[in-house]
Length: 401
Image 1 (cartoon, rainbow, N blue to C red):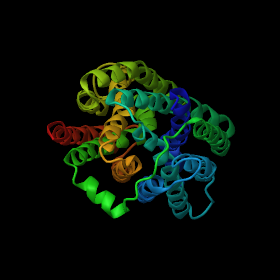
Image 2 (image 1 turned 60 degrees about the vertical axis):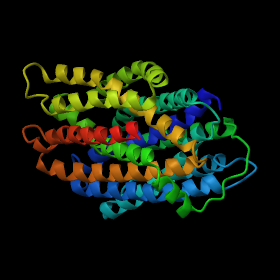
Image 3 (image 1 turned 120 degrees about the vertical axis):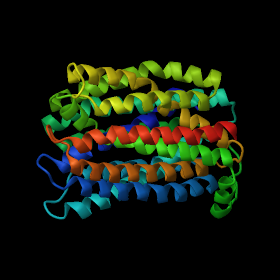
């Protein structure tokens, strides 16, 4: 598996999902509002629940199927254009019935997202390699993920402001499809018979793994908190930092630049000290600085200066989340030979976490997310910090299992 070509798959998937995460609430909740924020949050939760169900079904299918093109590649080739089409539909709502429409297209998008990304990630578990080699492969995947996020953050705003949301979505859909197809055409899957383990038996096997239980509990709790923050990034920049919407891409690109600078450090740290220990340390940093986000604009000094400082500090924990969790899971998956099922279970947990995050954000924003009336927005990072601490407590169980 060639690292740069494998990274193209992460680039395409990240470009779509990060653009959706960034602009879904601003597009639908206004101004002008198409839907109340709680309805947007619930629709997003429906989409994430669809992803959860699809993750398990696709994981079992991907682990068991056997084709001349491999177990994973057919999902990338066949699912990518349909995934891109569903992404485009998100940004062309009808004049009436937008709530039902949004829930339906998000369910389709995230279900298809699982059908493409789960087999893609399972290639990490297929590697017959050492833990350090998996960290290196995960670092390439993280680099592609980060590059896709950078393009989403840097270009989505200018594109939709000049050409409109549908045109922006169409351009990104084409780019994502090409990248996912290029990845599928370039990877070389290991040959061998697919394990014939029923889904129920595979899930029972995984349920008995105490390290896996601790890992999923820790990552899930942390993901709820960090997912909540990602959904309000635009409001954090425009309301808490007091910057115009046109400055959102520049702030987000600073965060991505800091994250990119930290990627080699995190990868080396994970190879030397172990992915688990490095991830814990980076999440502790996130738990410390997240409450400060709630105080931007309330502390002495210019709000945008404090905001930029926190954005730079976010680079290390973000880099850790891009690289280390998949490396940890790939190592756990190597014990049982069911990599897609492991990533499917992780997908189930993360999508339940994302659904919880979207629902929580939708209802918290009812308490205010506008200048002078921003209590709900300020509560989001404070709640996120508490959830990250709870996740770290769960991770401790993995270290001692």
